[in-house]
Image (tube, rainbow, N blue to C red):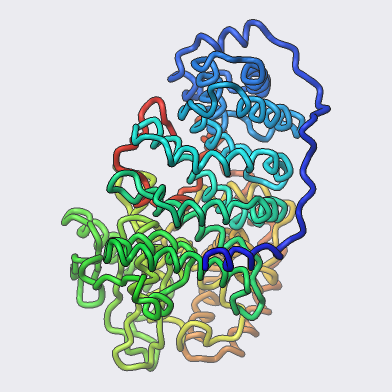
Amino acid sequence: MLTRSLIALSFLYPSLALLSGCSTVGQIDTNPAIAQQLQTTAVEQFFTPGYPHTRETFNQAVKLIQHESIPEQLDRQLYFLRAFSYFGPLATLTLDDKQRLTDALVTLSKREGFTDSPRLQEHFAVTLYRYYNADDTALLLGELLPILNTQLPRLAKQPNTEANDYALWETLRAYGLLLTDARKHNEVALTKQLINGNISETLLAFASSELRFRGQNDWPLANAYWALGQYRLALPSEEDGKPTAAELAIDNAVAQIAKADVKQRGIGAKNTYTLGFHVNAFAGQESCEQQSDICHIPTLTEVLPINHVCSASLFILAQDLNQQELAQSCEKLTSQESSFHQLLQTDNTPTANDTNSALRVVVFKNWSQYNAYGQLLFDIQTDNGGMYIEGTPSKPGNQATFFAYRQFWIEPEFAVWNLNHEYVHYLDGHFVKYGGFGHFPNKMVWWSEGLAEYVSKGNDNPTTFEVIKRDIEKAPTLAEIFATEYKDGQDRTYKWSYMAIRFLAENYHDDFVQLSIYLKTDYFEGYELLLDELSKHQPQFALWLNDHAATFEDETTQASAKINKLDRYGYRDYLTPSHLTQDNQHLHF
């Protein structure tokens, strides 16, 4: 029974204390000039960097929402808040500002006409996931979640119009995006608030009802599955990896919904469950095979129909690359091989007992496709930006593979994300490091990631120098960089490791090559001893870092202001209803 599954969720946390509905925050005086500008400016201008997105305009818009009753003006001010969330200085907003916004949204929800206006409900949902996605607003969100929970079933009962569909879609997105931000950015208070906000009950009730369909389309169910998958990931987990009672309750409740749907719709229902909940809860290949009554794994050629040979040592499996893109990708990969061999003086000779004959490069259309089919077809963990799997080099028939996807966020330009960086991992594993991944006990992260960054980017690495310049006063030492582990963070893993590799390559090239020889001959003791000797160059390394930091010209200060974009991996492209386009009335970045 679905009810029994829901009861198992109730013990997770004691209820959080919510803020009182009576706010004591000070009110903002009206600025007539700004208010008139907000009330008369064409809404398209709100979404341009040149519009005055300031804390004062934010507060004036909130004040207008608090006291306005005309639907068209409420629409305008709420749409300005959406624009401000992308272009405005969000860091300048105080907790009082956000309390005023909360009070205004509560007032809005009680206004006559709110429940009959899909446009205002759409704005309400978007405002939630754009402004209440961190710990500092967790308690404030507690006042608003009940409104969202009543909004979902109400909208689902409305006629199939475009306006109603936009509102329903954004309402479902609000759940998923808030949960995604909470779990990805370790927002503990936000996570607890969401778990205690009855959202799982609301989503499960919706997904098990006939309201989950819009005509013949199941995009509402697919989005509810995705939000439930994010909820499942946000739940506290056991250190031993075994599912908790709460996690099993969600799994079982969703499985019951899927089984009932499969009885009605067959393979279509299986695909919706698989791409909606299963892969977004990172349940993996084996679990899908065990649940074949509701989960579906397509064939390799269905997903990756393109098999393109670059050379005797390199081939590409692709989802949608055309001939020009395949040729460009091959050229980018093979062109850096010579520089790699020259830098490390490998003589193009593989390591001993390495049977890899050709690298397989798997390129998906985007991250969403990688997330889904990387799990289902290749049984890999896809909560990342792509990966290289070396396998066991000494095993006959072993296939080293790099999993990647298009940089979909730069379209119509074309590039494969991390293509050159990951190819260096293959070259490093095949021509330098003896054995497979994890063969050497420690002090390999800086080598692997720093080398991949250096060979793939050379001296053109402005994002690294931005960090070096910013953090030069707390720069790690050579010895600390050599001891880097992945848990030490991305800056240490990639950027400072790049600097250490570059320093050695430029100043102690013979020793740098000797390190690679020790790795190739499986002489880890010699590698460690040489690292100890190289650590003594710390004074020179510190001066070298300071020189680079001083001469780096930070081009970002001359660039246009950055947009506070949505997490590019937060949403799934296949969940977007095809008829809901991002026109001037429904912009996102």
